[in-house]
Amino acid sequence: MNAPHDNTAASTTSPKSGDVRIACLGGVYSNYLALEAALVDVHRRGVDAIYCLGDLGGFGPHPDRVFPLLQEHGVTCLQGNYDDSIGNALDDCQCGYTDPRDNHFAQLSYDYTLAHTSEENRAWLRTLPAQCRLDVGGRRVLMCHGSPRRVNEFLWESTTSTHFLEMLTDDHAADVILGTHTGIHWQRELAGGRRFVNVGALGRPANDGHTHVWYTILHVAPARCDAEFIPVRYDHHRLAREMAAQRLPDEFIATIETGWWTTCLEVLPAKERRRGRC
Amino acid sequence: MSDRDAAPQLTMSHLDDLWFQVGGTLCNYTCHHCFISCSPHNDTFGFLTLDDVSHHLTESVALGVKEYYFTGGEPFLNPDIVPILSATLQYGPATVLTNAAVLKDAWLAALAEAESHSTYSLEFRVSLDGFSAATNDPIRGDRTFERTMRGIERLVAHDFLPIVTAVRTWPIEQDDEQTDAFRDMLKARGYARPRLKLLPTLQIGAEAQRSEAYGPHDRVTATMLHGFDRRTLVCEHSRVVTDRGVYVCPILIESPDALLGATLAEADRPFALTHGACYTCYRYGAICANPSSPS
Image 1 (cartoon, each protein chain N blue to C red):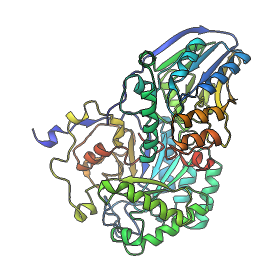
Image 2 (cartoon, rainbow over the protein chains, first blue to last red; image 1 turned 180 degrees about the vertical axis):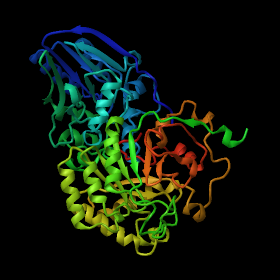
Image 3 (spheres, helix red, strand yellow; image 1 turned 90 degrees about the horizontal axis):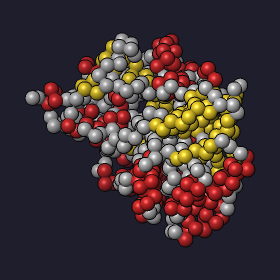
Image 4 (cartoon, one colour; image 1 turned 60 degrees about the vertical axis):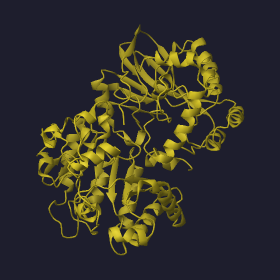
């Protein structure tokens, strides 16, 4: 078992002040239709910047279709574990599953995505930073994919202690940490007004029986710092048809059509698994 | 240079997982493959009390511990186990490793209530080493299959989703066939969405007699760690509290060199990977962790 690529360098963006709203997209998983709908919603609401916290490919069809959308809309992207794998044509997605059934479906998705991502886009993935830091009204915002210390760390709501999150904010000099990777959005307020936010995923529903997907708007003002989770409805029937046409697994299509996860279930902790149907 | 000299020292990066040997070495089963030879008569390690655990839970906050694990022996022989798990859920996620044979409905109702008031998951990892009495009982003892299955049924009735944990006592090529048989059996017994975890055998304790002990070359060397993700090794991010001090990992508590100190602070020091069990941990990775937190 090899160590994930060490690509923890963070890009830093200039300080912003006043009332700042930042759209944070997570886990696109090739769902270009949800991405398109999310970007329309973001512009309608009005934000100061748009970030994507990585894992652009996987699960959905036509992986190359997300890249022009991200680039045309000026979305600043981070490199997730999937992007590192696709960019460097590694053997697997480095998602971090240990169960054979989880890995079976992850590999089907990965092989399809690698085969259908252009060399030009793979080269672009290799250029992305793993983390990004912002200074927003004096608050230190750190964006990452899994956690600040490891790109594929699973930070589930029910298996991550509050004092562990506070340790991460201390160790990584951040007031707000934003991540994704697990595919389910959640947030927790920490001591001293600090906050951890999992921004959710656009690529597949949140295992709640609803077909919409989620992104996050971080709102930072002198007297407030909070995150709002935004549901995104999109043409999921069309996505399901395109997945079928690409001969992607029926299990993936069922998730898009029902909102319930059918694969990669073994990685879920008890509370998150209990909320689902499978 | 001897094998021992060549063993690399491993430093803990952070104490993510805090284990408690809450059941000591006392167990109602005497499994032939147990890596610490637990039994009804092994009192080498004793129970931890609620006070013992509470002290370390308090200490763990400043250390930023992420998750808590409870093992033995059989944790549910400890009369404090229900208040211990309930208290832990106020600090973070708790996982208890059990054979499920002595569970009582009143305990499970209390634990379900505690979990419902907590942000965190309470995981039960239930040891079962075969999908039938014919395959399980020769390893775990007479009638243990039925006793454990009744415990699993109780857990499911209380809306828990136990992770059934089986030691691979079959050739690895049979994993798919074996896990399918486990799933079919569990579904037939009313566990609609069974969760499974497979573990490699650890050729120490009773297992060294059942199969064979590690050979001299079953060791981790410094060369083997080049480019290797050390986080998959338990001792890179874990320690285990016992009534005799803090040990490097839950597997090696019968090895004198694995006792690292009296406190968690003392136990935060490098450990030489000299044991055959370290080699198994190296080969398979994440053997003690839950699938939700693989490293």
